[in-house]
Amino acid sequence: MALSYKDYIANGQAKDFAVPFSFIHDEDIKVFVDGKRQERKINNKVVTLSAAPEANLIVRVKRETPLHERTVDFYDGSILSEENLDQANEQLFFVAQEVLDYSEGLLKMKEWSLQCFK
Image (cartoon, rainbow, N blue to C red; front, side):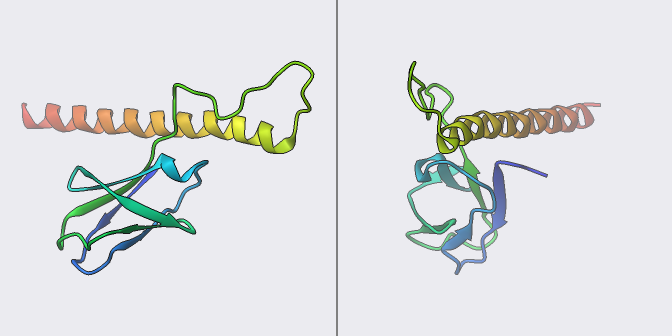
């Protein structure tokens, strides 16, 4: 079971798709329809596309936590708040989940290719 994305099969009418996992910033949520990135709005853990995708296309709602910058930067003498500590740890936790999902996807692709070319 994926931890950082959810796939939906479009029905040709729905434009709204739930985000069933946690994230830090709205910008971390990306939506892909048939592999192509889509513009979206997000409100209360629901993404809304400008148009309903065609029926039977795969809609992937995915979290992409920034890897190259920290969400929290600590300074000597600053007060450590629970909110800052939680957010820093969430970033690491989310990145670990995303790497796990990515590596499991690669393993599935490898298994599939080995079966196809026997």
